[in-house]
Image: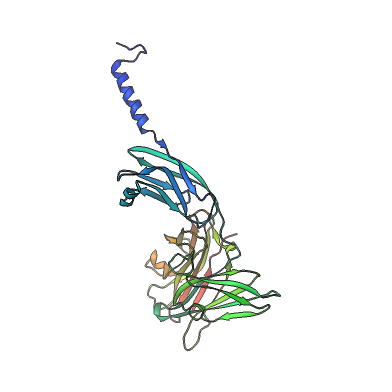
Length: 357
């Protein structure tokens, strides 16, 4: 027997059930509102949804379109507030980002999208010294950093020096100061970290010219009674930093795992972005044989150093090798360098990361 539309009754009931299931499976539209929008890079943007997570079976997961993600989940605080509906995220660099969110609210699937415009908040005229120190390192090397600044102009200039401390967020630097320099003069800051700021440890150095150009160089050395010149560390403008979609390489690297002869290689990164970013490092022998890959997260304006870096990928000696680095965070900018240290004398050689032309 057929119905008036030619469908058997049992089959019609089955189709009705399938249609009901499909209807219930369709996700409700979720409205996402970013605030502020536009927003400067590095500023925490609050994303609000037009529904609230009210039970422990509900949650909404966000993809922020820059490699970052987050989730609104139920907590005891949600009960006090009558539900949770906001999440915050910071972007490393400018761009137009399409944010997506999906999950379950009150047992119903929900999803939505929103666009946010991120503007630049960091000047490309900022200058970075990628490594500096006042500390006793491996094998009792007494690292010190001198900084030299020159004013090439015809009038007095002012500038800000800020220390970007190792392994921390430096959006609000703990150690910074404003300095003046007369025309056609140079100023040397011996043992900058400790003598100027009273800080012991490792840090990158950021200089912000305020009202005129400056020329900057630095020297990091092993302070021993017999004397050592150490290494000249260049100053690099943010405009020359490694950007998203670029690769950079450090070559002529070595590592002797006995640490009783030869050299060891330390790998350094400086985040020139006002939000956390992720970088990848690929390790190779000079022959092109890959040794392994590692991923590192850098906090906002963070400085990170990986000592004896090749030990992260091999236990064998590396007579000659190289490292390729990149960031996977859209809009990010960073610096990378290697320091090859003589295991016997503690003398360092600075190797800058080069972006192939």
